[in-house]
Image (cartoon, rainbow, N blue to C red):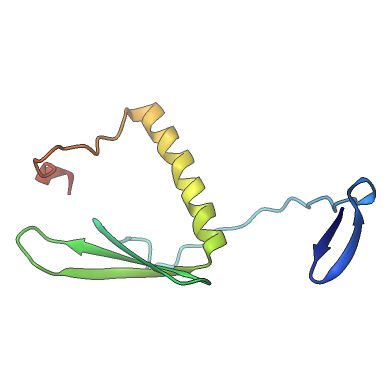
Length: 114
């Protein structure tokens, strides 16, 4: 069995040696215009074969519209990686602070969580 990469035929598995990944650190810089963040309680997701579009918005009680505060556009690969990272962080959060309640039955969630 041979592996294909960018149209190039690679040797069969016993002779295929993957390059060692070099470790590096990324310096994260948050622009001043973003440091305050945006509170959102609404998410709309659209997708096509090559990208996902995530619209984050704020739904206000008693108002029939949602104001979109941020839009993220990413590849399916990156969205799946984001999902894995969020799942890991929810596990850590729940281990430290308890299970996040999401089942409110037929009652709407308490207003103080928004």
